[in-house]
Image 1 (cartoon, rainbow, N blue to C red):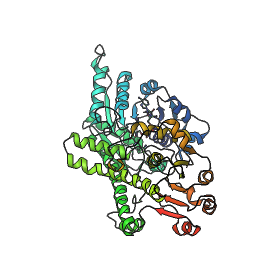
Image 2: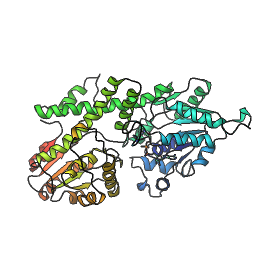
Image 3: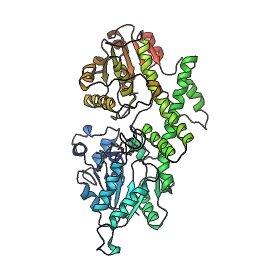
Amino acid sequence: ASNITKIACIGAGYVGGPTMAVIAKQCPHIKVTVVDINAQRIADWNQIDLDRLPVYEPGLPEVVAEARGRNLFFSTDVEGAIREAQMIFISVNTPTKTYGVGKGMAADLKYVELCARQIAEIATDDKIVVEKSTLPVRTAQAIRTILDAAATNGKDTQLATSRPKFAVLSNPEFLAEGTAINDLLYADRMLIGSEDNEDGKRAEQALADVYANWVPRERIVTTRIWSSELSKLTANAFLAQRISSINAISALCERTGADVDEVAHAIGMDSRIGPKFLKSSVGFGGSCFQKDILNLVYLCRHFNLPEVADYWEQVVKLNDYQKHRFAKQIIDTLFNTVSGKKIAFLGWAFKKDTNDTRESAAIYVADELLQDRAEIHVYDPKVTAEQIYGDLEYLQKHRRNDNPCTATQFSALSAVEIRSLVTVHDSPYEALKNAHATAILTEWDEFKGYDWQQIYNNMLKPAFIFDGRNILNRKEITSIGFELKSIGKG
Ligand code: NAI
């Protein structure tokens, strides 16, 4: 049985929130405190109205309702939580660096480093520090160095034996947004990497015991710490590679008259390939795939493996190409200009069943259409207008200019221009009224059930639909009279 009774988690985001909620649900004997420096986020996690939690995930409100206030707490008292806990998860963001060395490629570890320093400063007894964030391989070494330095620093007057001892574990998270609760409850595996010594093994056992409250033992995989760190980057690289591979084939399908869904189905029946993650689309988004691959590419270059770096970088380039292809097809089809034309966007989130928009394909497609002065009308069931404007404003400042397929010189739009060209609607039918074209950017289930006849009646003719997720029924849609453009259908 586990001797852990108090857990803290630094970072109450898309990973920290759901992960800790599930640990608390499954381990009523463990007090779990999730802390964040973002006071608004913590206030939102403490909302009485469970529909307004900061993270939208199916099943999450029920889990929070069960555990919150019992053994699950959300707080801004980072120091207090660190002091109290025996085990501390670091679940802060690790975005791509936007400045200095490794700009646009390397992971920015400043938030992780701050956590390590804060733990080192505050801890007065032994702690197990768990890397939950996705990190470059060998980050545990950096964390260990910081913890050890601070553990001795300025505490020389104490007896050596009274200095806190730290164990560092790597425990990457494999949940997917939109299915996070299910992924956590019925995980394919939980991965724990530990340092190769007695303290490391003991810490590994303690964390394995926590998960064993609901995860079958054979699904708790233990490895050396570097393997664990690298496994997360590798998993995301392989997953994204599958999407870029099928998207590459989608372009060829469009030229040749093949159908990418038929190809995917046929190859997916090969048990060596498997049917999952072969859905062609406007391109992958989300906060992880691109960031983690760029990080992997950066590492390979750092370790002087340029061929390996180039190989993985192509996955991101192909994804940029796919987003660009979609935007270009809209402009080409609408007689080579979208200036002043109303383009309705169904969906802004990077995938269905989440309110997360980070790196969403919708942002990039919108950006390209806005260069041509399109009027974009957005409807997404879970994303707020402020989020949408914020995403577009952010991109104006952080556009990656190394992308050869969008070599056109983009000019940055001001916040005022963005707000005058982009309208966000609460009703899909309003967004679609009098539109020249509809672009489906997210595969929300509700889009399939709309009254497409009514939508057709209210759109300008010819009424174009660009189905970036291949969710609409071609026969039904074209028999209404729409011009339907799908991905990978020649
Ligand atoms: P997020 O941005 O949603 O949440 C991170 C939170 O950490 C923010 O609320 C931020 O305010 C807080 N934070 C930053 N520095 C802090 C500090 N010093 N003290 C207290 N709080 C601090 O990020 P998300 O999506 O939860 O990702 C976290 C990590 O998990 C990243 O490394 C990511 O790569 C990884 N990951 C993300 C997955 C996802 O689906 N979003 C899946 C698997 C891993």
